[in-house]
Image (cartoon, rainbow, N blue to C red; front, side):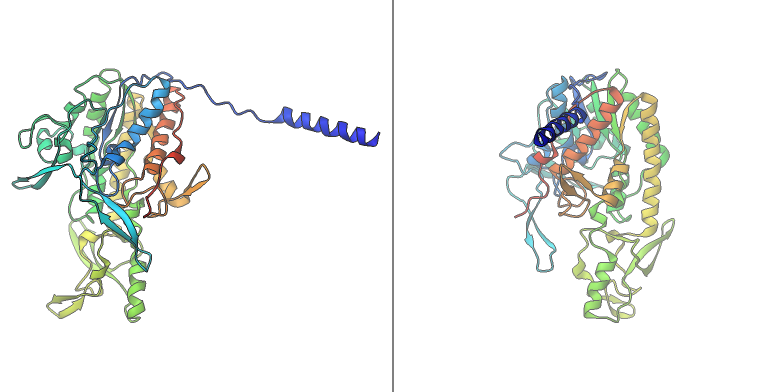
Length: 439
């Protein structure tokens, strides 16, 4: 009898637990108040699927707009055409592959130089050489153009200065005269994503503040308002993304002044500092000892450190004296970092204000990447971070994303769309997309 009562209690307990089991309600896929029948994406290299220092077919196929479009098709989205390189020229502009590691753990990357889509080089007086690629003909939904700034969307001759844009246009450079904003709005569309504005800060930052300038804040605001007015003129809805904190990417956080100094001190303990040529104010630069707040770019050739440089005071070691500081183009110093962040904050205030005025969804890429750098990310049990190579999100160039990184960004856009328009586009399965490919 005692065993029977015990049995009854167990059964009652199981029934109670079953009754208390939480239900997981997966919303039925829905487009909400948006129409995804013709979705287009505008933006720069991130939109195009650029990765590993180049634009190539496999990267294009894993672009975040392509991933978004695949998910949209479950809620009535239409076909999504990308200007893919052909299979015979699948390596496009060329890119980097990881081929091994040095004894000190640093990666060995090798450029891919076969099966390219390069058709020639066009010298442009006063500008430089423009690489031209095999023309693409056909429908386009992904209008991502590597290198383009918001500043350049109304400049009609731009199709003669950017080979990635030139390949999409019917005419050959130097006869193009179609502004990007006119090109992307030439055909009707029902929904758009926009991630323009990154290069207006990134180009300055990646040049160490030496090879480009930040787009004027007022000009950015005027052009962004004009862009969104054009994109929404026919009633299309859309989603926009903020400009990331460009200093949070591996390109600026992999080679550090602390690590360089430690390496030098192993051979010469008397060395007390690494020297850089740093911004003082305006356009005035002066040499000073580097600090942890000064960011060395990923492509800095560390082998230059300590090499003799001829100066009025004789041959002195590169980077180790105030007379031989590391060149500007290799360092985004602390004042340049602050300047870049100030401009990015202004750009993002504009983006959010314009988006709000037009009732658009916003994916806050700036906050996302800051959180990624500070806290990392766990996706389906996999620990991810902004670390170079091992983090799984950034590709070999330290700026653009891996397929897994693009899938995560696609989900960020989808989440913003769902929240704004009452849609329930299913999220992409991040586990279906790879990080950096190891040899």
